[in-house]
Length: 114
Image (tube, rainbow, N blue to C red; front, side, top):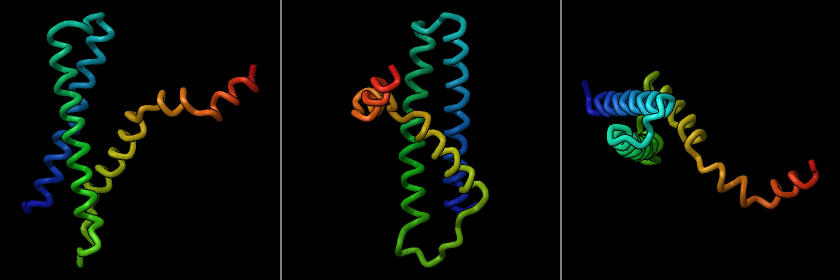
């Protein structure tokens, strides 16, 4: 297995760990155990893994779409899945409240609908 494939497996493993931690946090929230020491550790590692995944995907994007690369045909099925998941994660974890609350057009729409 080459370095590229190992890197892809590493990113997939990070995403699986993130998903498991997100599910554990969701379970704790549903059980009312949000401020426990265990849940704080879960949230801590969930945010760290999400950050490492984002940086890892940025590095992968730089590598895949580098203008100096001669071999442009390195996007495998796994890479496509990672790019797809990365796009979904960016949309879901975006700070939508900053955009919606401070946007003038949104305030105008709210006043027009009243």
